[in-house]
Image (tube, helix red, strand yellow):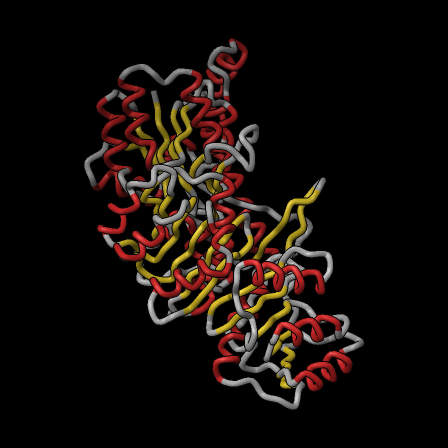
Length: 510
């Protein structure tokens, strides 16, 4: 039996080769892999002894040869293939271990296009695909983490059809992911990221118990290990819906730098938010906005959850708590809640991966766009349109309201008082409905909105929302502006003694 080893990532390749040697395999190798194996005492045959042709063109051509691909592709159970292989002097290659040139590492490191081109693997993917196509006869190894299981299977003669088929699937996933990465990079560099094809390339992190509903299957796929690097699930098994809610809460809570922000989300929408002097105070104030909706909700904490905060949170049923980190005593407190899931980022504060693009499924395809970004200076640089100016506290409240509104489903209107959200209306077909719905809920909760700041993620098309805000006691408003009736909105604000600011940036979220 012969194995061809040609890897870019040489981690554990010597140990794998020696394991194959012990099992009686003959080792063939190329270039740098050959040198490493030879230097470490592995009896190895250099590839040009097999191909009867030297590596050439600075290593661009090494394995693109019929003695390689013929040895991989001929069918061992086909008499015609066996006869033809013998006539051509082709010997079988029964295991191929390949991982590809480090294209991702190269584009992360340099913008030099010539260097990037040289790190596009040609022979490697070709060998992987050849081996995967003939998986019944050839073991194809593309993952360093599979070395031990392959040696064990060979030793126990458990390399059955199912085992080989699983390696084949991994191999085609490997080359498909590699080619997708190259195509997306080229389109980003030369076509502004919007080429003829767009490839969504994610690696499975874990299976969820089910999808949005029990009759649906679901799983989390991550970009470049961003999820597993940023999140550690330390308690419970997250569901599909938990993850989407965590994402919504995390976006809002992480948008305020090092501030002690706490966001509570239910079904993807914020039902509580606050920034106070301590995380415990922030959670307590955030919960006041809508404690009924918070039941069964998701909480994102921009900080460390203490024992005291855990005890407070345990007073109601929560689905998920996402935090920078948890004190050990807090985790002990949460152990009492069997259905609660905990996510930590192992840091003092939480952060987003900041994906450059996002997309949404529609029937028959998906729409794809640059990710929206609510910049920290949008409120600071907003244009004052009213005669009255907002106070320092009102400006803080405007910033909170503006960011929450921009990260919540349209149409959305947010009311904030003393750095805590007191009312929110979201996902409404009318902006005035969103305003009125929010105020009704605040009244039901016994919350005083007088003196608060208000934000709308898109312009007010009529003055009626301003009139309603004035009746509720709103003192400061921020919105993008851009309506043909902006003058009427400005006039209404001045009539009611409300400070009004235009950001000139719209943040629809659909």
